Length: 372
Image (cartoon, rainbow, N blue to C red):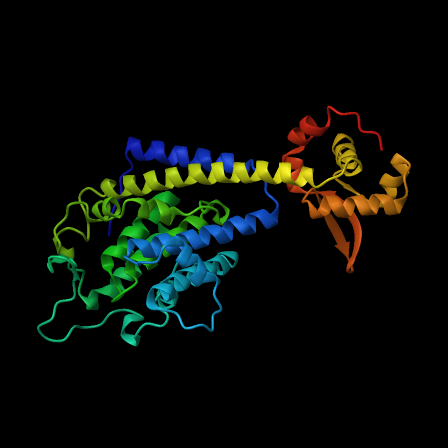
């Protein structure tokens, strides 16, 4: 089992990631925007993770495959991208249930990654025929790049990994790095090891609050330079698992690379979220007419975070129906949220998006004299 001692450089990267995480928590987006960003991020991850494995699809082809009717016949590269996307959806549901990391979950994810493949490629690999060696071979030279552990050792190695994840007091970012390395190195399956490792490592990040709302693609950063990615995983060690890869002397090579990628990824997620927030704010305000803007400014200035239309109509001297119509428009633009009781709108409240951007809205609109 890989054992990691934190270095000053690792601590700096963890601190930077935590700062990005905090900055991200200060930006609120409408749920419709978050869902759109998440879907786009899952598409990018599906494309990038398979690209690392040599999938020949372009990003636009991968996008088209994901959006195609599920009953259509897909070529293998298309199916691989779709499988990864479905695995991300599966883990999204597992996250809602806070399902812990387990061998069963690893197997379930790998089975989805290899959906449509031959039966022997799904589940833990078994013994090779006499005279054959299971190894990862270089496609050009034909030499063995990596000789993983014997199939008989795999169950115990996975049990040790699961026990580590569920009992360690290591930082969650370190745990995610270890899971990534161990699954690639144990190589428990005939195929799908790298994709499963990236998915399960990402799930560890999600479980521990480092998933950044499902926005952005960490896989993209691994795919930018696949050679560096593999070189960092290999750490200059011999090809045979039992010759040092089971307990590498310098795990900081991989862990520092992993943290560097997460740091870059988290910074980009914050930028992307902030950009989307500004775009949504300007777009949302542009859809409002003068009277609707007046009502929004009035609600913010009076700190009416939850209200009934009838109460506001009495305060401003217009009809209840007029306020209801303006509230409907503010709701459609993400500034208000209807409070529904027994299938009827009882009241409205200012959305988190509106409250987070309160100062910015008042700065943009409040310098004008709004009189309802």
